[in-house]
Length: 342
Picture (cartoon, rainbow, N blue to C red):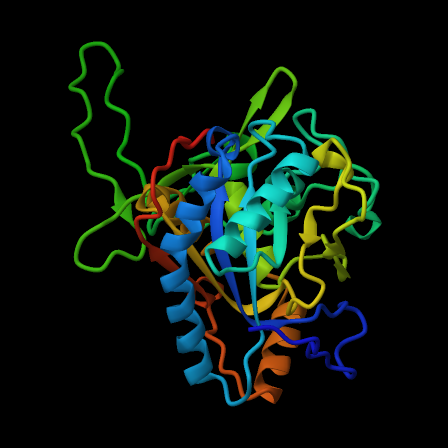
């Protein structure tokens, strides 16, 4: 379902740039390097399994939108932890496989674009809208993290900016060492801050420092990607990672391409009020980590207000919490050869 029209509010706050918005963005997959080298048949099988679920998502959206909905699709490729085939070989293969399965890939998203000029990833000269060279979307998000300290604690745990770890509660205290001649402290279980009956404690690694620079985790990059798809990321009010059309001549290296590449010129906008990700259950732990991160990210209130106002004028009701605008379908998408490198 596509349309050339994109909703734009002319009276929006001038301090915050507007981005065109679809009603729904559906991610048709996230491929690691081990999978990206497979032949076309591998991807045809993947998209065939996805097709029935995409149709269900489209039908559900059509029932809740008072007009013909704008729906776009995207595909995320891992060019951060690995180096896939050159664009001239990989992009036509993915597009052809999707079409053979009855689907269209509207946008291709490079995962390295979420990190920026870190860990040896070159800045992208084709994306001046992302700000100065080396702008890291992950750093933009990290700067907006407001940690949720456990009740009745003294905040003795170092901040996430020092450790690179973020949790949703109180971890179990260490019991390995203790003062001589003293009884070791009693073990206490970890505790989730907002537990319902029982705790589900999560401690998420956002990044780690290595000799050649910071390495962002897959969960952190995925959290950045979800905020980007929701149209909620800005750099001092400026839009970031604006989609660019497919160039007539594809370069041989991925950093020479925009972070968000528009494959179908007729596609509905990349950003959307709501997003859905269709993926294999192997990704469930990562997406749980993504939600843990996003529950502690303070999105710019001006951006939230702008998007909510625009949704209201279209008769679209948005959940107040950002994580509630994200939906998942965890289904068997066929063989997943790649393992989480993050």
